[in-house]
Length: 211
Image 1 (tube, rainbow, N blue to C red):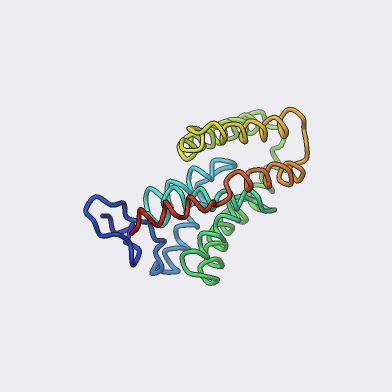
Image 2: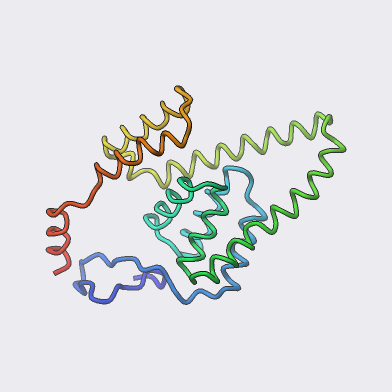
């Protein structure tokens, strides 16, 4: 058992039984702020998801893969930037409202400061071919990092045919049919909720495992 995966009270203590993951509640606000400040300072574009996973799951152990994926799903379904949504969700899970505030501040402070400075610099060098080439390179790297983390955290979802069907339908509707994301969420979302709704048999099986 690792320090980042404390047992849940009442869980089975058998040697071979899996231990449920519990989100830590004793993380210091300063640690939350510094962690998200670092993520906000070094992440670029869509690649922020890779940095979030590396810091929150692999390095800090504040979330496991399931908690991270659920937070990411909520962040992507809500209006606004995924990075800021993730910071609020994770900060709230760790330390409540105070954690959400410091996480959001840490995540947005570097980007806001850098965008202000770089915006002024780019306005003066917008026609410089080297500047444009550098931006193209950063964009390509961000796509690569986002693709890598998608495969890392989505392996479980890609192993089931029903998940692949939902993913394929979403990609076709957004990328090829160019349907508004709002309508995609309003159509695919309820279908996914219905297909994965809790069932009485699942509850009975879960009770049998923990008894």
